[in-house]
Structure formats: C-alpha cells, structure tokens
Length: 300
Image (cartoon, rainbow, N blue to C red):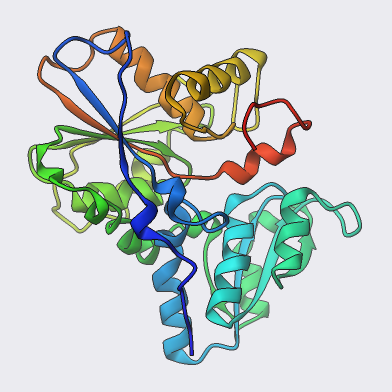
C-alpha cells in the first residue's frame, strides 16, 4: 500500500522575521515549507502529488520526467516515486554516465533510472515522449495544470491566511506561482521573483495554468537573478550566510536566496504600502547547496 508517512506537514511553521530593513508598519512571515521533508522538500511534494496519484490510478508502470544534473525536481521525483512504489526514469540534459553530480547520485540511489540526452535532443521533449508511449510523464519542474493543482494547496498550511496582503515566492517554471495565484484571495497580490535572467515568457507560462477568466493578480520581478540561473557570486553566498546568522533561515543558492534578497530590496525601497502583511514561501530546494565546496555555508 502506498504510504507517505515520511512527510511532516506538522513540522511546517510560520516564522516571523524581525529585521531593521522592514518598514515600521509592514510585517513579514516565512512559511517554512522546507521543513516538510529532507528530500521532497518545500513545493516539490505539492507539485508532484497529483502526478503520482494519476499514475497510480491509471496503473502506470513507470513515471518519467526531465531535468538537469543539479535539478531539485529530479531528486525529489526519484524519492517520491520510491515512497509511492513506482518505477521512475529521469531524462538528464547533457552530462554523461559515470560523471555523476551529487544530485544524480542521490536520484540513482533512490531508484531512478538515469538516461542522458544531448542538449539538442532535450529541446525536443515531445519526440522523446512519443518513443516511450507506455510511460506516465511529468514535465520539467512539474510544470502543468496537475502540478499547479497541487501547489494551490500550499497555502492551506497557513493559519489565518486571509490576513496577508501579499504572497511572495521564488519562480522557476512558474508552476508553484500559478498554484499560489489560484488559491490567493481577491485582496491578495502574488509576487514571483525569477531566478533566471531575462526569462520574460514566465508571465505567459503562469497565465496558461490559470482558469480562463480567472483573476490574474500576480507580478513577476526579473531584477534579482544575480547574473543568471546558475550564478552564485560571492555577494550571494555572503547574503545567505547573513540570513542564517540573523534569522536562522537556510536559503538555497538558486531560488530562495535570490527571492528573499529581492523581497528585502523591495522592502527597503518602500514598494509595499503601509500596513502590508507579507508572506514569503520558503520553497525548499536546499539540496542544491551540496554543489558548493564543503564549508562554504554555515549550515548543511
């Protein structure tokens, strides 16, 4: 029987941030979704849960997905499939067998079959799907209406969620952001902070996952990528370390650190109206920090 007993939604909590850079009349809370699970952490489980449920319902033998060599999605899918008792295959962009990153080693250890495809082949994912019609597929990063459906449940963990005026989160594929927009109340604005440089198609990607005619009260900020998706300049490492020492919040190098920095900068620029109550979604992804040399960050 399928069991998800390892998940710990009771461990997810709201952490209030007390910082000098907060305007006097603006409050900031963090939903510590990273505490849900050590591997399927943050938003990963919510984006995956209905894909897994659908695969089980239709009796699919194997679930397959896509990702890079450092993908949070790949390792989370591998572990979630192990929990669900489903075989899984990961199609990995570039790279080669025998030269495994920590992410791919973990995914393989959790039972994922790794298949390497060239970058040109990876761009035509539909061609790969056609060749393997018996698989149940998840798009890269869990993108799709099914992933957004699960992500919409994230705010159910937030007590008195109606009190917040803004919900802020990092953006990768836009799947979680679409879920947050779906579940936001009419008076709430959802703000995404993109970790990619110049990915101006994100707005369209998010809107595509919303119901026709649904309120689209969201905005994506593209100014805080720190040089690009995989860029980790020294100032970003310093900022992550500072946040750990000041607030005890562990941030990852790709998503949450850039988003939290962006939120702080927007606060310092007085871009939130007096009386705003802001909720930041900590979307997990801390396994990505394992790509750094040991000891780079003060937490593991």
